Length: 483
Image (cartoon, rainbow, N blue to C red; front, side, top):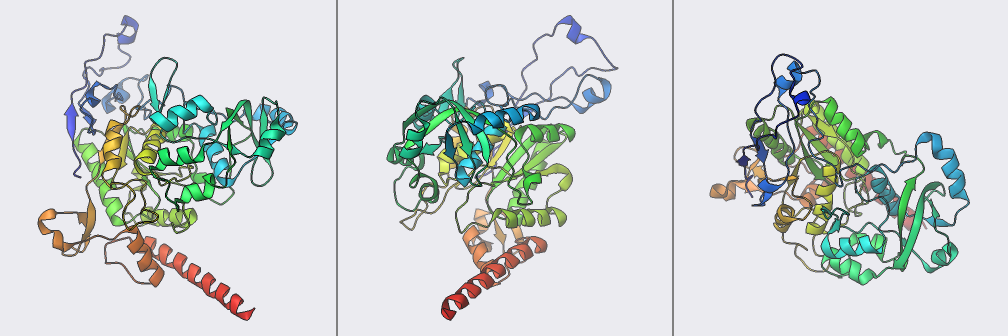
């Protein structure tokens, strides 16, 4: 789908009080410049849009700053549930005396997500009322009547034994996979976990073979426990990548430091090829043409649970680093950070969550492409979701009206120009589509993709990863034969 651009003149600003109208420097910014809106929603012009300050206003008015917080977090306030350092010892002592709930690796990732405010205004694992709104309406209604998007239920399952051990306690301690206390859940509510309903409404199917279902839902308990979360200290994984895990608060601060006047987010769970880079660079070019002075790219790979045949996070991050080192993307205008959420592969339902979380991180533009968050049908030879539905749903989703959606053009390998280019239907025979599966097959077999498909440094990272896999498989086969 071609990138659709529509311009809306910014509405005239309401008169300010006299004290706000006084000049503090030489000239004052008097006229708002046109705002760029990328959105397929015909009512999008009615939504409140981020304000921008011109560069001259920064030079001439000491009180004016460019704020990359161009978009308010959902609920108006960014949630931060990490206990202040001065209170941690006392809270940890209290937690040690409480009944305990064990967390899986995926549960811990959700503690991370909630605690840092990615799911703002959510302040803990969902109680039943929130769960039902999320499951059936894909949104939550706020006390003032407004709606925020919340397309994925964020819940914690417990088994019968844990439920009995909790008894009448109002609070519980939460124990990580390593046995350490990581959080407290307060004012808890326990309710039935209807797995079939949850799966059917989230994925649109109950077919066997859904990765997240097999990993996190089928083996989980038959009860859900909700409550207010307190995270005892920042979640760390000690995998050498924690410095990439910037919270929404940290990202907003970084965008401000760079004086961004637009932030466009791109999520991926695959290595970056030159087609991805083409659309990211083209998006920045278009934003500059629209009048933005310093649009910043948030390259935001998903860092939580992914299925077994996806490229691991550490390999992807090394590959992304090579992309910047080779100059395919500009480090001066790119922020690379890890999004800690687990992956559901739930198509149009999940892509709303991915977009909503980036609002909380301060992004006011979101790039969406073909079949976002999709996968092949687990039992049939077809896509599980219509590849165009993700971007269509984003343009209509309740609670996402303030986010500018950027549907990108389809990129493919141009066999004539020998580089990645936007697909031209008039000469379709000249283009080669290289899927993620095909890319992984190239790397696994030690074959090189066509020149210009990926930067050499990035491709070398993938080849070395698959060589290491093959070496490990050979070693395991030899061990089996020797026994």
